[in-house]
Length: 82
Image (cartoon, rainbow, N blue to C red; front, side):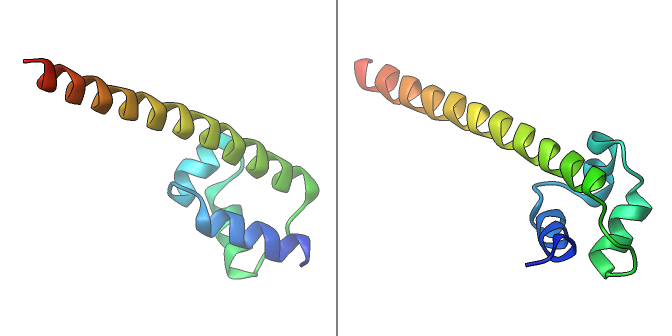
């Protein structure tokens, strides 16, 4: 797969809007939208910024998910004890 295709797919599958991704990456939302539409070519700089943001979100989302699971288990254990 080409860099353009990989980046288009990553932007589409991001857990946020194009604007939120743009804010996080420091890249114009217009540029990201044009990459998704195939009207702008992806550059390695933009691709690496998107990759860094997605990795950061993944780590953050996993940590939040773990906290939620812990809270659910804690609540279940607390209810069983009463």
